[in-house]
Amino acid sequence: MSEPTPRQVLVTGGGRGIGRAIALRFAEARAHVFVNFFVNREAAEKTAHDVERRGGTVQLLQADLKEPDEIRKLMTEVQRRAGRLDVLVSNAASGVLRSGLELSPKQWDWVLATNARALLVLVQEAASLMNAGGRIIALSSLGSQRVIPGYAAIGVSKAALEALTRYLAAELAPRGITVNTVSAGAVGTDVWQAMPDGGAALAAIRARTPGGALVTPEEVADVVFFLASPAAQAIQGQVLTVDGGYSLLA
Image: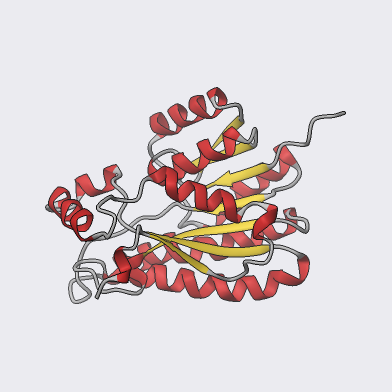
């Protein structure tokens, strides 16, 4: 009996944090993982090495996702190397930590282009490479629904991403392709080290979470992996919150 054909998976922002955990989770299922990165090649190369150690195969693809032309080149390379795409994980994100009154138009455009428009262009390009059973999964955060100090541009971009998920899901459902989003709670990645009092904020979130623990990148990756499975075919256009119950409390 021949081995099943490995799934072709693209993870944007796959070099670090949650994106890295997602890439490694698919590697455990022996997928071929396209790991997209923008700046940190060293981290992406380490992830690529670990993908191969976990049993997958890998290709690194550099692209600045706020630039539509670079997204198109990225997808052209996926098509050239694989001929198809089975799973798209839109994880890459960027942001400016400023209040709405302090944001410049340039900062606003940068964040919205990277976090929301990128999903639109990625899906426009990826849809032609997907067959029935294709999976598109985006990553969001609780700031899309809640007001977090300094999170204005990021929160709005994530809200736009979640709305776009519903529209794209309705358009692609007739083709057997699902589109969903995972909204992750606070995950202790290196992003928090760049935030003022990030460590203290994480400690406060941990204390407020009913189970007393932060969500891990691996836990988020497990949910993404489930949404990419045949068992999730009937889940369409949804935003699944993975926060350990943090958002349950008033």
